[in-house]
Image (tube, rainbow, N blue to C red; front, side):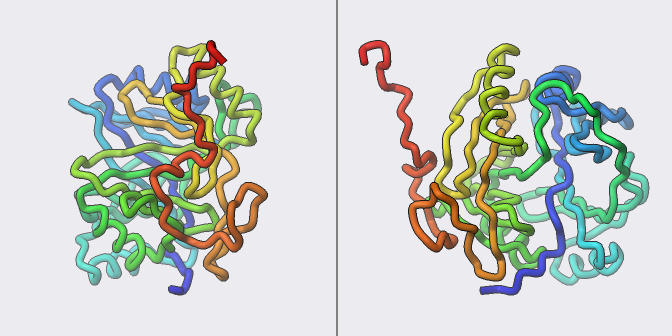
Length: 297
């Protein structure tokens, strides 16, 4: 097992291009409950729990994945990290004041044309005492569809130091840089886009509350809530106005890098729970089939 010493501590933010940014911003602000922290250069910034931004929405001719931001370990300096990226074959640029809340960052384009930003610190404020909407705890992870998924996997593992934690039928691969089961999910398909963005909720009760809020605001739940096999997170999915899929989850597996396995949970079907390849049929381990005619019993 490779040493666990990732260069990043977690996913900091995701930037999306929207054909109707005002509508997209309203969804993240009024339905999901993020706080709008400002607009600059055609981009609107939205926050959870006091970070200057977790989601960035910009105007675009079609929905698009603009970039993702990862926070670096405290002991890593930007200049040295940029040199490491260059040595690995990736052109890296240090930018100052390129966006509000982040004084300096390193930007690079990775496999599949995916733009990465890496930063040390982000400006913070006290989060609202009574947040509106669903009000997730935090931005947890994202999933990326790319024809270059294998190369992206190698970049996360070999350059950034992420660990592989599971896959689904050799199609979707999960990696982490902290104790979450996954911080990124890479899906190998011909398309190039965001598969989903995931926000962690407090508990299962918030899943019910979130589903009610989504229904009341005309945002139907597409799948779930149900328990996944890989990661065992209790998850529900809906679309934002640009048809970007949003996951709301709780109870994700906790990764123990020193052991290369996940903390035991009552719903695990085997012990120890180590990284493995899951069949597509275990997308939901509850195997709930909503084509059942409940009216007929």
